[in-house]
Length: 481
Image (cartoon, rainbow, N blue to C red; front, top):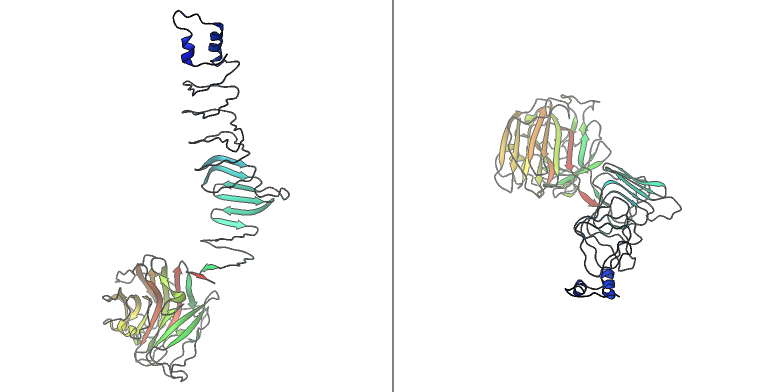
């Protein structure tokens, strides 16, 4: 006796047939019995649902266009026996597996409780509740290993001791971190004991220089001995260096090009006068940058590097920049130029200051912006881009007599330059404002520029005092120890 196909069974009951006992047995054995069950050899579709209080066993696929509700899903456990879900699987209870649970997409859960070792080779875990991992790489003698994620806070506990605690974007590690790859941070890494066995790449501070004549020491100036070897004598274009000690103990090395000849009777570059506890507008003290006393002499200073960049190099499109300086002179009309600016990296040109003062001619540098005293008593702006036409703009402002004048240049990451100033106030004080007249200027993306300062003297023997200077570059630059 056996189960037969529908066609065979129908042939037993044609008009005039007398079915036998055996044929009736085949009919009964070919159907499913609600008590005894049975085996379905072909594909079967239940259009209104299937409710089963016992097991459903299939050697092939069980598919459903709707929802399958079950208190338990189980595979036979052989290496080739798997349960696959081609679409989403929503489970309101637990998933227990003695083998692997794999997903080509995301595992999304309101709460994932994992008691064994868990490996995430790829993809993401998206969690709307909490994730608790118990016993990952745990020797079972020093306590559990737990990972808990709540909102923006992640806590990892290893061996009963706190390993990682994050609040917002801050991470605190209470034990060692060992990495054969990269450890990167856009913020601050604070450690009581940081040991680097490989290469350390760091960002420089954003401040290139932050100096003033009251809280910082007089800069150290290299020995004045030019190519001729005579002590205290420099020829036009000869170089020397200054080292500024900053407010936080940092030092800033500067390359200086002398303009014109410097004789032994020239003024030294040092802070002179009585240094007060607090600066005032009329305090005639500071770092004297006059140097030589002859007409058309002076200097150009590159802060934090050289004419070709170095530590001072700033890249337009990457860095935002500021240059803020306060000067004092008994009479600014005694100086052809006292100006700050940024210029593209290239060799020093000692004729640059004289062109700024004349507000006419070829300024020799291909790309630059300068702001300050340019020609006696006039506050002017000078700009040039790509060795093109030079713009000389009279700001409509004048310099104060025997008082302070503060100038500031801002450059955005995109290279857009703006200008501000204030006069008749103590150093670094007061509210800066744009000059009465200004000009638009933008450096090209990718230009590498350096901060520079120009002093151009007249025949008058008149001191020019630098009271304070601060130059910033945001962000810092990467370098390898």
